[in-house]
Image (tube, rainbow, N blue to C red; front, side, top):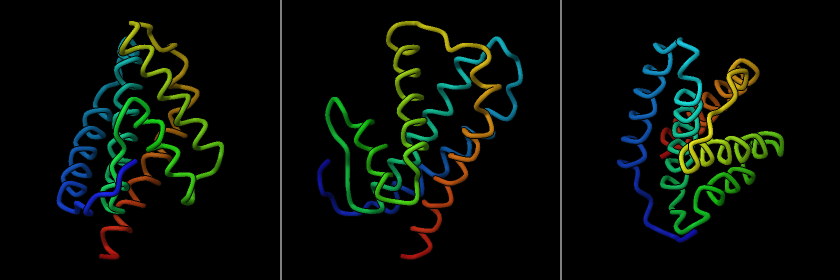
Length: 133
């Protein structure tokens, strides 16, 4: 994690992109795309986490940057359960992206509510930080 000058415009741009991704996800209902849907949830969570870091003047770099970004959220109002869930999602996404392993069809059914809540919470945090500037 390195210290940078806060990049508010980039954070706003990332926020906008995550909204586009969510619109896209809300239009996909076919269960044969579960892995793609879950990967996109991860991307949204990762991007919103990046926006939080940018607003706070940090940038995660290197091999463990995504892990460090998620760990950064533990300093905020995210529970240990939330952090562990996001790390599990990161591992599943990495296995699908880098090893070609599909995410179990029931994963989304079991975790959709939690995924939506995390996205909403992260988006709220980004918007709160932006409005406080």
